[in-house]
Length: 471
Image (tube, rainbow, N blue to C red):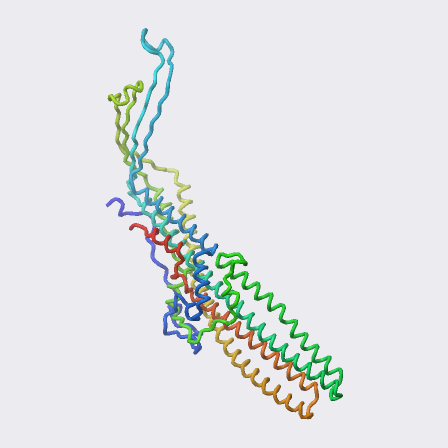
């Protein structure tokens, strides 16, 4: 009955705007499905065994995730410490000394030097009359749950960054292949042009121009290879490896991961419930609300029930023979009154922290919605752009074929041929780059949706098994 009362306000989850729970504005895109729940293990939608293995490695060995798990373990330990205040506090003391007393303090003929031993057991229990312990436990539990959500947010980032690095590596490989095909095509044109120059059917300037275009496209390969190497090195770090230890399957991967079905995105209500950063902000708000109660409890007396039993022996031989025995029991009341200005200041500070946490929560919700809508918009517009680039590439291919046929017939000049080949090369490169941007846009969308945190790494699963707090 005494602990049922607690100082400070009871926590109530803050309400979000009704519009936050509605379907997304960008959900009209046929490439997404607003009626289906977002997939927590979304990377399986790519159906890529190599990518699945890399993500499993990242969740098991990523260093950022290990740090987050350690922070979670510390928060759990703090919660256990707060709960221990519900139990009686005990301490055992023992001291011994060998002493010599002045001669005038003892009777003639008695010993002036002797051993003495003092032992005791102290027990105290705080009567949580005004809920200080209860609010402290609530605050510690909120901190632990916020740390758990922070760990989940790191998992989301690790998965998304791993997919992004893999997509970056494979996209670079795809762009390298396109560039090499273009170089091979231009090299063939250069050989044909050289033969025409020798036959007197083309000018030397035509050969110089086609050779220069070939060399320009060849120069594009080196930066793409550097980008691929950087992506592979980043992938190694994300999976907890040195660059030398990256699996050969990842090095050999050249197919850009793609999703053939509409991406399930759900609605705003599901997003708010799923995003770990929103959950972390809400749990920190709960913890700060409880700390108002902790500070408010200092306005009232702190009552403890305590007792002590002990024994003092004049000499080691009396330890087990029933030396002088003592005991005491009684309450202890401490109350900072009437000077409560410092306590009032702590309460005001706790309330200010709670206001800041509420603003942070509201801002986190708005940011989650903004990031998701931005990702949906970027994904939709990149798909539209990709479709236009496909049409442009097809038209450029047809134009190049027509021009080459006319060149063989001698009905067109070389500049027209060169321009057609340059246009085709640019169209192919732009399309390959668009393929990569679509893959990146998908990763951005999945990151915004907050999926992936339910997939547990081994050390995460072990930590969670030990984290279930007692009620």
